[in-house]
Length: 185
Image 1 (spheres, rainbow, N blue to C red):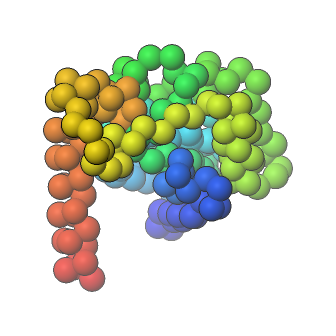
Image 2: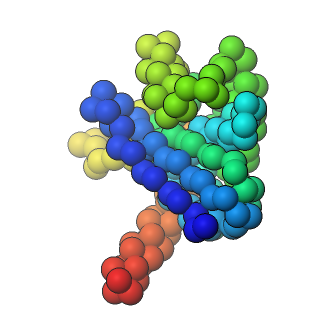
């Protein structure tokens, strides 16, 4: 069976923070290529009655992710510029790193007999209510007042986890990949 990937748009109240919810599954051992995009994720791997929760930091290189048969993976991909306050350090310190989400949110738990994505959405909404996310506009728009290059660099390191140069390079590569896919199909 091929790899099945589903992308689900966030509700209107989460669109400023969440790029998408996603689900990946396969019944055969497979490998999934994941391209960097300046985002970070909460990931849940479910196998039977057990699950593993992860925080996955921003990536600078493509990664090959092995998929085990009959394991379903779910996630929340956050928008570039969204910072998770429970990290306490720059997002760049988590570049290419995956850690158990319970290290950051000890009380988090899921019910494997219930649909996972609605539980993830509820978790995000609870964290929003607690003030666990910050969004920085330097990533989104040109600000009216000029900023020094050092300030921009520092804000990118904190809120994106990449340098502005890395972020721009990744977005150029993604644009080329999208164009090649459009030409291929």
